[in-house]
Image 1: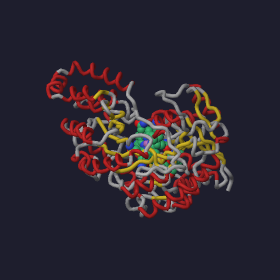
Image 2: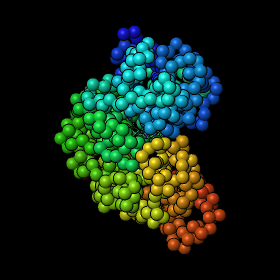
Image 3: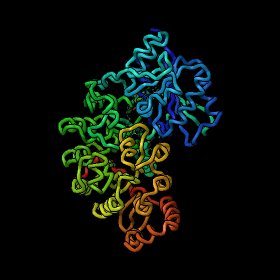
Image 4: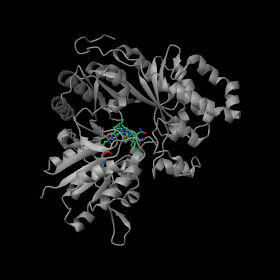
Amino acid sequence: MTPRKVVLVSTETVITSHGLRSLSSYLKVRGHSVRLVFMASHLRCFRPEAVLSLLELCEDADLVGISCYSQTSAKAAGLADALRGRGLPVVWGGCHASLVPERCLEHADFVCQGEGEEVLLDLVESLDDPDRIRGIRNLWTLGTDGKPRGNPLRPLLADVDSLPPQDYDFSTQFILRKDRELAPCDGTDIGAQSYREVLRRLGRKGFSVTISRGCPFACAYCFYSDFKRMYEGTGSPNLRRKSVPAAIAELRHYKETLGLDPDTHFISFDDDDFYCRPESELQEFCRRYAEEIGIPFGAHAHTNSLSEPKLRMLLDAGLRVATVGLQSGSERINREVYRRKGSAEETLRSAKLLRRFAGRLIAPPSYHVINCNPYESEEDVWETIRLFERLPRPFNIQIFQLTFFPNSDFSKRAIADGMISGEEEFGYEEHYYDAVSFVGRRKKYRYAWFVLNLLVGLHKGDRAGAVGTGTLRFLCRPLVRRFFERNSCFLPLLKWTFLLAYKHRRHADIRPLRMYYHKKEQV
Ligand code: B12
């Protein structure tokens, strides 16, 4: 097989890119040469110099792959057009391409739907044979009639242990500097996005990784529920966990090749629910992690998976930051709208459990909450606010505005239910921290949504996120609520208060990281 030159480009604003790094390694171990390009920029569209710089880098490529989430899909489309303008064949993949393959095919020669390793390899190895390309499963191409044509999906890889570690060979990686020019990656750029505030304050370097694929749940607002539906009938397993030996071997690989050090680094496990492994498996993982890796870490949990035995094991292994998906204080919204298991009482149980072990964490537990959901009644929003009052302090609240993704089941349902009118209200091109944009766009209960947004950050002592507890109590008074609800002309006042308070919010109260592996604290 002729070795091919492939360039893989990400338009995401962070350079974690687990998917793209995995694709790159998969091709490299099969003898192809790959360059990874991170077009990380917060601008709404790329500067012409940046596009030119990419075109230069791709000059001799046999194939260019583009990856993005829906957020930067417009930028990805622009790059794909420019690359094709130079006669370069372009394949587009990732969750956005999986949701709207026909739309992406307007800008690319091929679109990969779903998991990409085997698909990309098949494509790279069939570049001279259009007939073979047309038969590649998961691939969308234009038929001879000029209409988009998608092949059936192959089952998901069952053996995730066989995947090589993600590609962190900086000598073949490039990053956009100052929004203008591509420069070689120097390794200082890897980071754990999920805990960046914690890391900044600790002065530690982050590293993000996942040791599973998929999620045991299928919450309606997450792309993963669409992904599960797409793969129905293909005989694919839902959640694929790396075995303990394979996970540890991969972590050791990163530790050795990237010089990750327990004294200076922190690992962010990006798995949707790190606690979902069976207890015996988690115990084995934790034992080996403490012995062989020993780097403090953070991990996400679903309230249903969090249990005392699991939490103890993880703390002994080095868990120091815990994040938990709470989403809404309203059981109705969690169950009927988000299709999430778990009641408010279970959330409180998990919160109490975390509170008991708080001394072993370096930051208070962090709860994730979704705001600006048009399905909520105003009372549902206040119920979430009231739930915060019942959670044991201190804790940290992170608020994400509800985003609808194009062609997802959830957005179709919301349109059919009359909750949103169309794509102009989806908000997927915005950052889901951008409260002002979402509240303005959705309009429904601007007052309640603003108050909830004000609660982002640390809840401790007399603080309730970005405001004091006294201010919160004042804002929740029925008279004040009624005043703002009736006199919407005063809402901009609240918006500016929010912007100011948000700017000065304190995002976590962090203790210096203790050398837990020298001195094990007792709880
Ligand atoms: C880990 C994670 C993060 C991490 C790391 C992200 C990263 N780039 O690695 C962090 C915390 C940084 C993050 C951030 C965000 N995230 Co996020 N994240 C996830 C999570 C939990 C797992 C993603 C993952 O690593 N999957 C495993 C890898 C292997 O899969 P993959 O990336 O999809 O790649 C495979 C295929 O898609 C395909 N593929 C991908 N690219 C390409 C390219 C080519 C050419 C081909 C052929 C194939 C191909 O092959 C890959 C390998 O099989 C998912 C939820 C989930 N369960 O999927 C959400 C998810 C991906 N995130 C989401 C969102 C919205 C975001 C943000 C935009 C949120 C925001 N800020 O507003 C940011 C974007 C980052 C940025 N600013 O650019 C959405 C995306 C939905 C959508 N339609 O776009 C998801 C699906 C969650 C949800 N709400 O539904 N995220």
